[in-house]
Length: 348
Image (cartoon, rainbow, N blue to C red):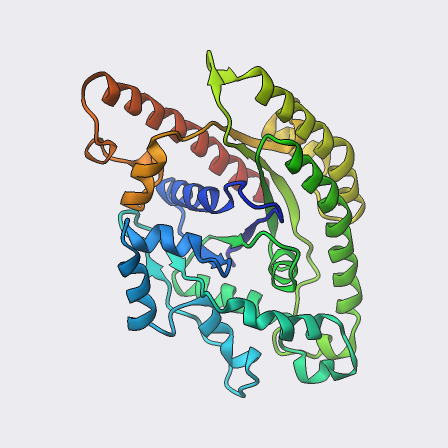
């Protein structure tokens, strides 16, 4: 069965979508079959992959393929139909063999109320018993349909029931961050919220109705795979002094506040496991530091291609500028190859 990886931080603007797309593409480049899941009603991941710089292509998908998205796949359970869940045919991502997309939907948040009621485990839970385990089952059978080894889930920036559900249904989670004070605040918040989600799962698994559900929730808890820090400037190959100070503060907050709480809630591996994959200096279990894409981000969005996979033609430059962009492309390729390889090893 495919390993599910949630990319989650309830702080916005930390490059969750960017990293899901880039890490997923790299995993496919390394020979793995990968399913990308857009679980954010903003549908940024779907837009990046389908638009190729044109919003019309994005809109056309939903007109021509109304059943080919995450919301439609969950509809039988969330709308109370008697029909069973079936796999949703994912889209082959253009330009990268082995990479697939389960598109999101702008109205996915409409299911939040139903999921919240199911999570409350009230007296009416028997009628909603299949709701909590539905999303995980749908992702499993959709991944099986394309023989995917990994499922990367792009969650929205909130503490919603949908995020809680998909987070707890994953095998591991990555926390993308920006090097700023607000990311540190978000880490303090996650250190309180994620243990509460873990405790909810313990209670839910004991509820008679949920234990009798057709689509059961797994008792196996997701494990913290690490953080990614993105969007900072370099000077002489290293983060500038101001950004380095913020990165150090973020790492300290993760090490001293978040990881102990995750460990107490069975949401982390042992320190030895991280050290085996990341080395002895595994501060905050950082998977990678990704500097600003700068002008390459424009070409990436226009071509629906990660920055490290842009062709010379897509780079759209000549002479010395082309040489500089080729060097940056190679640098980003190495950074994401390291991140993807570390995820594979951590989940092995």
